[in-house]
Image (cartoon, rainbow, N blue to C red; front, side, top):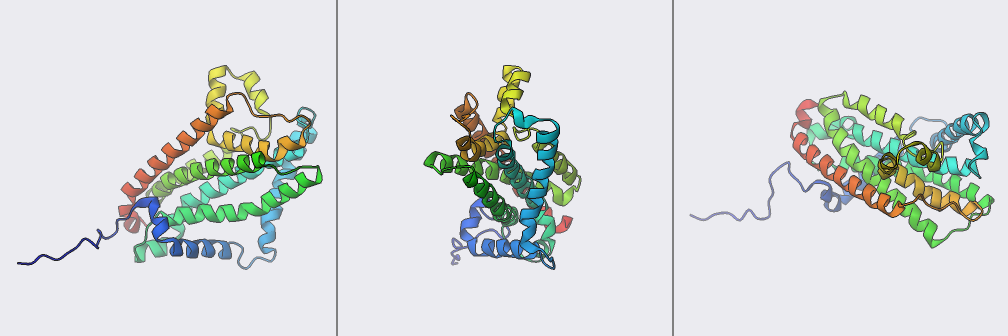
Length: 286
């Protein structure tokens, strides 16, 4: 009796997790194109909203924090400081929120055919990154007007900040995206986290204010937050070169960076394990 060679086959409905993006890259591109092309469908202003909404958010925060509370007196070039932090928060909130809803929003595909489910949150995060680019373009334009000069250190800080915030968003997106299919209460937790993200990073205030208020151990916990670390790297990339003599990083920034990278990696591992465990019931729950 001969046995058939099945080495070229794999168990149906099972993949390699987020590593499948390399094998299914063509499908990932289609999902990204679909997300970006349908975002402003039937909209008069279209992509202009990618500029209008962050600009409106910046004006509100600047009026409250800069004009009313007079924070601009304590932080030089407060407008650039504020906006370089806001763009990080906007990227995190959109990437995290879109990744959480990605499976539910693509229920028609999930219920009909098999493809690596991780493609949906990853495509959502990359789509958020695409819509993040106009905000960076505005920030870069303003920085150039006040004398910002690009450097390898600034570019490296920007890229490292992006890696940290996107990795953290992916881990949270996988975790809550899986739970959101079965328990829609997950969306309420996501909204709370998105609301807190604005206040748990030095965006509307300086890190020195937090250091002066909290005990040392609490400040260390505060600064290990990946959002806070990413915000500080964008401050260093865009705001710091516009300040006379430079403001520099908070003390122990290297350890905060290591902690943020480790925390983001652990979050991706937890998110992936949770996603893989719950994805078997996605079709039934949807």
